[in-house]
Length: 204
Image 1 (cartoon, one colour):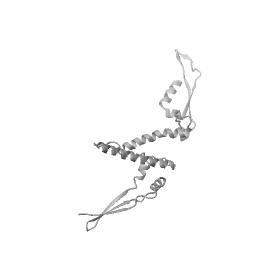
Image 2: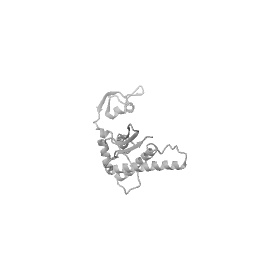
Image 3: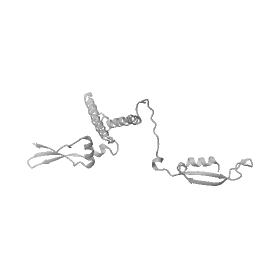
Image 4: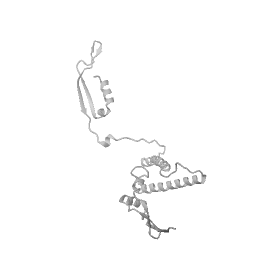
């Protein structure tokens, strides 16, 4: 077996090559010509395990960012770079959660109103994320296991009760906030959730 043969085997099996070293020991006639052919007879093949690496070392990598802002330190450059992710998430939220697309209105005034409400909702969303980051919480709004998903289980319901005289009473009540809800509300400075409201109407 020639060294090039070992190289091809290591190329086909990169996981094995990353964990083991292969050492070839040749015989005394190594390199001689027999019938016009070079002899490369392997006397011994030694397979030695490489020193084990921790998971952190195995996954260790580097991210290189080139910038012209030489007056910024590494943390400021990284924060500036991460704004790209926040801009992408902003457009994703506008197109999905906040209803910017698709617009089914036909009148120009209604289209403008739809855009205004979507942009206004995004400002509220951005204010929530900014407030959380200022308190050390890096959750975003619409990605997995974040603010939207965690607070979605805190609901508000309407109960409609009608007595024998035809008088209907509408009660708007909120469910009891869970610990994760109270944690997020505390970071946002929300001291009190929506209170119970009662509306009475008479059926004709």
